[in-house]
Image 1 (cartoon, helix red, strand yellow):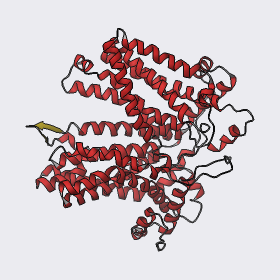
Image 2 (cartoon, helix red, strand yellow; image 1 turned 90 degrees about the vertical axis):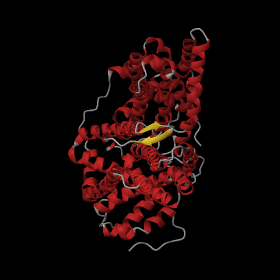
Image 3 (tube, helix red, strand yellow; image 1 turned 90 degrees about the horizontal axis):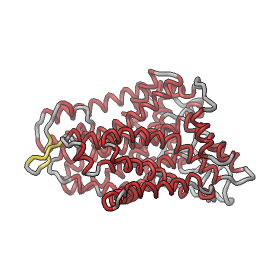
Image 4 (cartoon, one colour; image 1 turned 180 degrees about the horizontal axis):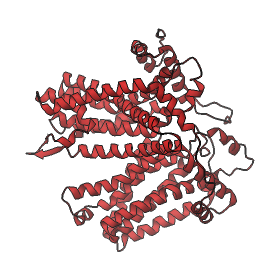
Length: 550
């Protein structure tokens, strides 16, 4: 029997209570689930503070829900582009494609650590709580955030649909949007359940990491393919069904709307059947596997790898980049965290993969549309390398969190304040281990495509990313690296910086373009200026990165 409604209960608990019978019908103890979810979300709003600062506790506030207003504002601008076409199948395929990218990328980067948390089985699984209830509580915990994000992203479009396309379409879009958020969670859970069932040990951890990277690339490529579905005929955007469109999930969810507008259509009916069937199969597969899923997650605790204490590359770069023994120690410490901590890889590697694939995809997409390399260069496509600046907020934000955050007390208790050295040493380790190899690989592809003439533009992309990375690190790092526990409430912390980087990226790219067009050796002049800034951050005074905790 569900708890009686309390006026002070959060909205999400009141909504959950309306589905208590459905949980009970599927073998879940709803009272246990409700308590677990309520406690987890309450704890998400509490920032662990091992040593109280200034004798005050910080106000308990869930930053995730507070940041949703920005998603509403951004999504409001989508409306204008969405309703350019009169075709509902065009409008809502683009809409669900947008949702698919945002929801799945957020689930992978921010919520995977919750779905794959190994501590719940130890802390809660030993109590009289069934495995099915524990698994459902974990999924519901994530779904509360995912559903809130869905409402923020889709709310403006849903409201506009009622006014522009009528009540029936608006109601159908609302229902499909709700189902879509549920479907995205099930899709992720099914993939993880399948992988956890098939693999074991350290190989399992590697497969999980690879699958997250693969899903991120699949998400972006899938959205780009959505743009290839439609043709411009007589100044109207129309959809012409083809067999290769079948795997594109957003089209499945838009198909019922196509049936409403156009009537009987075999393709739309088949897409609708696919979405209903897939959602049903995902649900029953997860229901059947939920208990086993929680048990299989414990495989991730197996420690059967031989960790390398030192590597030649780390030792050499440490000597070159770090000037003091203390900074070298922090550099090496961060290098090992990056190398060994699964949660860090989960948060960082998918955005890195997306940043890598986007410039290449834009280039190859242009080639497939009939343009040659000369046309691509003349239209400024080499400047797409600046898209990689968007990975900076995720890289910097990830430096704050660790699964072993409780060990940070040793830094806070140190009688010598070396936090500036720590932040700079950690930043150098991330730069050398992630950003440098990333750009080296990307540069090979871009120079191969565009030739040596655009080497300066590619190099400036690397230098600009380096300068922005260290500049943002200096501005935003207000605590010791790896001193915080990552919670679902932290999922949106990189969103506002990304909005700011839209302007920074455009400004840097435009500056490079103007230098190149109007100054002799303009791009190389910009290279020189960026090099000076980079060396300032790498080898300047470490007090640049000194912080005072709030």
